[in-house]
Image (tube, rainbow, N blue to C red; front, side):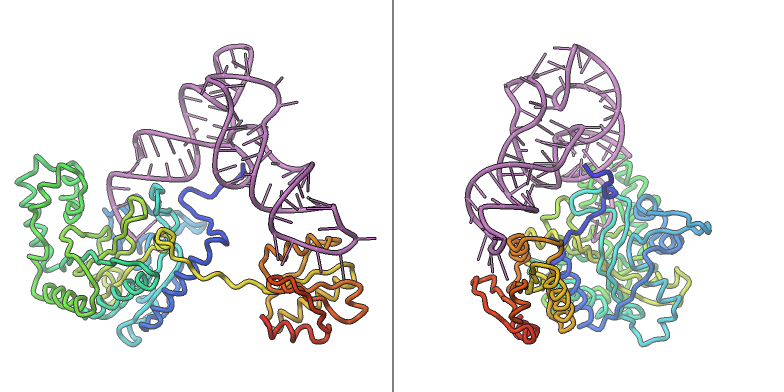
Amino acid sequence: MPSYQRPPGTLDILPADQPYWSRVRSHAKHLAELAGFERLDTPMFEATEVFARGIGQGTDVVDKEMYTFLDKGGRDLTLRPEFTAGVVRAYIENGLYVEVKPQKLYSIGPTFRYDRPQAGRYRQFTQFNAEILGEEDPAADLEIMTLVWDLYAGLGFRDLEFQLNSTGCPRCRPPYVEALRAYYEEHEAQICEDCQRRLEQSPLRVLDCKEETCQPILEKAPHIVDFLCDECAEHFASLREYLELLNRRYTLNHRLVRGLDYYTKTVFEVWASGIGAQSALCGGGRYDGLAELLGGPETPGVGVGVGLERIVIMMKELGVEPPAPRTPEVFLAYLGEEPRKKSLHLMDELRRTDVGVYFAMGRERGLRSQLREADKRAVRYTVILGEDELQSGKATVRDMTSGDQVDVDLTLLVTWLRERV
RNA sequence: GUGGGUGUGGCCUAAUUGGUUAAGGCACCUGGUUGUGGCCCAGGCGAUUGCGGGUUCGAGUCCCGUCACUCACCCCA
């Protein structure tokens, strides 16, 4: 047993798994850049206030899932539980609002939540994040949504569908909340404890209550889309029209409310089965009030967070094979000290000319052992150098597939190999 | 935070149900070939059975605690 283990909910991503990760990351970057998103890297931690204010007190994320600590200077800091709040902080702090509008930004990196680990749920997980800041056009919502759609589609995921809802804005949400409260008060006796509390603190959250007793009540609860103000209704109608126009399937989900307070208007998720009890592959939406809340200029925004671990799980589930990584095609084997030194020179020269090469490490190894290693490393050619070869000035080059061997003049060896690998 | 399941070399599994020194396969290393891989053969390295305590003449096996993993609730990525 090892003396030390990974902290709960963390992952070692071993070399065998890296091809999946490379595939996902490079595909995400490719699509983001294709759509004109520029990369932004923000710190992995921020002042706790950024998340507390941005995401909102009373949310699970802020109240019980943050990794919060004091640094040696007494600063109250938190490992980011999501990207949006930090991205908006960076947008304000660096004055990106004076740059061309809208700003299209993407990020990729670790996020942290102190949840109980489970299938598809980790305490440190990786997100690909994209935001469009300074634009209220529903076309921005559409771009964010097509970006993640294309990400999944490009990896071979089928039967995609958005869960879609609108949560309104500060103008139309209060009347809805009032109607919702009034409706719930009629049924107060039948609803669960959590919902009693939610009704006080974050009323919209009663909508995704899973408690059985609440289900019949929920079914007849008023829908927020029926309360949207003209502006929100029009925004929502346009977005739906555009989604249909581009053939991105969605279902209206009146009960979709997200666990972060900053959302306005559009909210959406993409679900999948195959990652245990977790279903969300990504989640996002519009947050027109967030920048102001964080002390910046009034700036509409829309964005999405994508869980990369869940994508990797799905890829394995679906049998999506990532491309194998490129490994060196040449192995340098040798016998004796002088040939060893000559091999070191060759190693150096080959790598300088961009030929990948393994050097047989360990003194006094038999050729058999070196060839075994070459075989396991799956190279095309093994260069064998002994006293004989040094004498004759010709290296023995073994083709590991056919087993054929040829003598190649040492002065021509680098060129010979470069032409073939 | 709550509940269920599981924990034996790096990986997978066995141990006559409480009975000597914890067994095998994979992987790894060496040799069979004084300079030739994959297949085969032989040998070797590697475990205080997650950890701590208890019951017992005796614990991998039973009990308690703890940690970890895992599944579910909850929340979501």
